[in-house]
Image (tube, protein in one colour):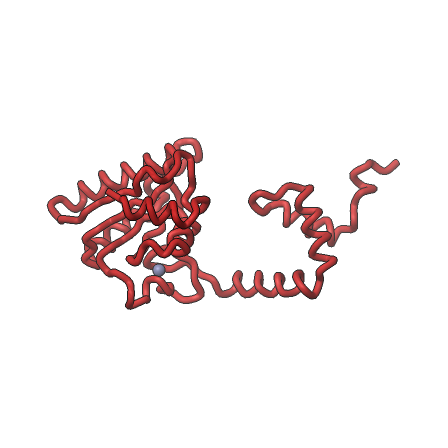
Length: 207
Ligand SMILES: [Zn+2]
């Protein structure tokens, strides 16, 4: 007697597709099945172009060795853009935060992606973040303003305190101004979920 689950099986190839889709953030088995069916139905319009884009991204996208952004060139397009303000550096947790700030067009300086936030719960320690590179950059690039654009979560604010203390200890009397996004950033809100206007306001009223 076959189990219900076995009878529902669509064949190993489709099951594999569903299983992989279910690993995406925000996806569970149910949404993965729906996505798999949609892809198979829209094979030429969606599935093949998506497969091509996935392969190309997997082969070509790399992490910028200076700022931690993702791009097909290293250093990335932001780091090599001559029109940007060379003296202002915005510290963010993840590449998604950098993208959110870029979409809002409120910040014209350079970025530094930490690669996460400090978290006792998830076991993220200072040595797990790109902090050494941050200090080196501030010294090497003659940065005069560091904007800490970290989320208003407990972890985000713990990280902001840590980075501010680190800069104060490592660069005493350097004159580097350390500012933070204002409380326009909602508690628990991640930068990527904010609309552009809120982000612009939070950046404008940084202190
Ligand atoms: Zn870069």
